[in-house]
Length: 400
Image (cartoon, rainbow, N blue to C red):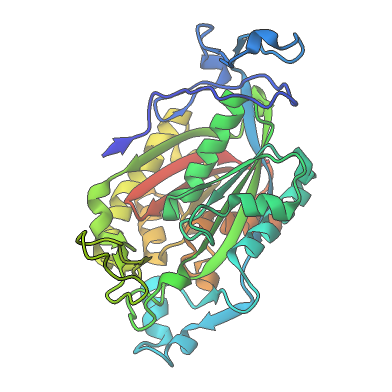
């Protein structure tokens, strides 16, 4: 089992912004500005740095920046598939699905919809709320396990947003934990690299990898995108208090969509001299899941992770305003809330309308809660993602 801890890796900053480095990171969480030792410095080692002018170069500085969540957006496909619709193609019914999962509808990519178009729509809404122009974005993190290109979708989102400054854009693959990892990564870039505006997008189209004859999995998944703009700020306004991240590859057998070789491939023959070459074309299998084991994993590990993150932030469960979990199954949400003693009215859930949207689920639910007025500036949220890998992690954040 791997635990993210004791790391601080400065990155090369954008010289055009010349924003001072931010905050140190140790022990699976962020240090508050008050607890930073003056022994902690951030150095930028750039070949040929001595040739830079004084205004371009950066002297070692204390790590004092914070980061805050200032904009959100979301988007979902137009096609809505209800439980009754599923009952027409697989042996199930609305009651069976809703009682076991809490899901009644899900959105599915079709027609002109694409994962990139949904991601761009969500991103634009987040930028508009934050009143930030695309050209002021320093980094785009695309949290997805279903990119529309093997090499990643983030650069295509950068292109569609028309970011003239060509900011760095890359994908993070961690399935349902992806968005939480994106938040932590954004904070690292801001606090350790001097970035100002980081756009985090959680988006997945798991419907493309569902076996629609398997009622154990096809009832669960939907497609969507959500986005959050994280911005550098003074340490006193910091809105990402702590985190706790884990992975356990031994659990991969319980939830996966493994690569497979095509059984028959007429396009490629043998060269007659090397056995097994050229290789067969490969593709990914449909999602395979042991629902009982995933449930046990989530209700055991997620509360522990949240409690750990709260402890690092110096907070208690009673001090949070909202519990926002990856929207996997209503029974999981309820079980985790019960273990943490969080009352039902403090749980954010939109699972009934969208199903499990993987990396999109947390930013999608957060955006709807913000725009409906449920989540207000200053509210503290305990959020956690969990799923394939197996990976899981939590973060204690403040909105606005």
